[in-house]
Length: 168
Image 1 (cartoon, helix red, strand yellow):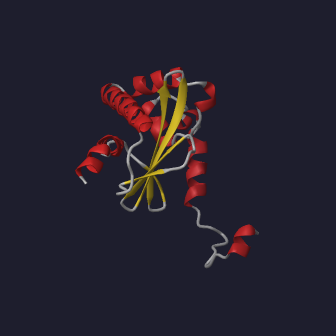
Image 2 (cartoon, one colour):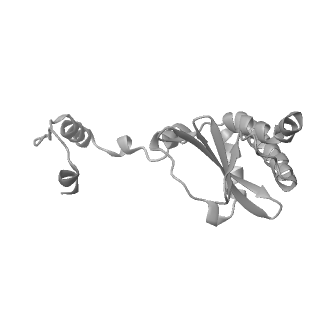
Image 3 (spheres, one colour):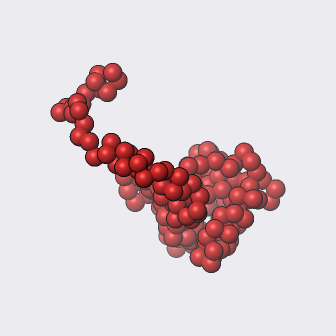
């Protein structure tokens, strides 16, 4: 039993480090996706938490479940886990110092094929307050018209919704 616990130390450290990052949610599941450099290539590591079990997938491979009493870390995974822990620790420290510079550095070093995603408008506004100042481009009349449209009640309120009505 103690030997198995020793063999799961790295994966436990990796999971604990992952928990320090804000997860995304899909239903009751939480998940994190990290793009990490390994030598001359990049890997996408996805960690998904379902109830109390974590599932780690690397580049879409078969998931590794943790904690799993039958699980023993393969030797090649131990080296990868050490590397991932090191990279995520550096990433976390860089984010705590200057999140914008850390993100810019990551994006600059990533290949174009991995640069994708969606950022919420509120986050853009927080990070880059002078970018796309739509309220500054609208006239007073346009702002009033927009607010009036938003304040209007729906002329045709729907009391119930069905799939058929939604598809119409």
